[in-house]
Image (cartoon, rainbow, N blue to C red; front, side, top):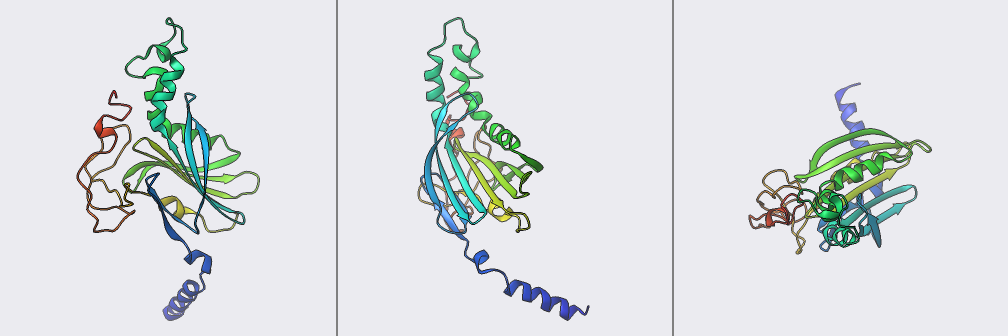
Length: 247
C-alpha cells in the first residue's frame, strides 16, 4: 500500500475515535491528595478497609461506571493504623508475643509492619480473585513507588489494570476494568498523580517510598500547573511519621 494511503487510513482512525474517549478529564481530590483522569465526575462513598493486622481503617472510594466499564480509586488512611492497633494490643496479657509487647521493630499490634506491608497486602488481595494475573511489577507512577498489575477475569474475560501506591501513609488502589475486546484501561492506571492541600501537583527529585525518608520536592507534578513551585521538603516519612522511623 502506498505510504500516502497508510497515512490517510491512520488519520481516519484518529478522527473516528469515539466521543466518549475524548470526554476524560482530570479529577483532583484535595482531601485525599490525588489526581487521576476519570471519564466523568466520580461517585464518592465512605467505607472501611481491614488491614493485614486487623485494623479497621477509614477509606473512601471514588467510582465511575459506564455500562460494563468500571473505574475506581480507593484511598485508605493508614495514618490511623498505629492508634487502632495500639489500642487492640492493650487487651493482650503481659506474657504474650511481640505483637502485644511492642518490640521496637514491629510496633504495638504490629502497626509498623501493617503500614510497611500495605502495598504487598493490597497486591496479594488482587491475586486472590478468580482471575489470571498476566502482569505484576514494581514501578513508580509520578515518581511514587507503585505495584502495577494486569488481570483477566476467568468468567467473562474482562481486563483489569491496577496501580497500587502509598503516599504519606495513604494507600491508593487505582483500578480500571473493561469488557473483553475493549481497549485496555492502561491510561487510567497510569494517570495517577499526587497533590497537596491546595491541589498543586507534588513532584519529587527521586523515587518516593512511604517507608523511607522522602526525597526533596521540585516543581509541580502532574497534579498541578507546571509552573507551580513546591517547597523543597520531605513528606510524612521525612518528618518521623514513616513506619521505619520509630514514630
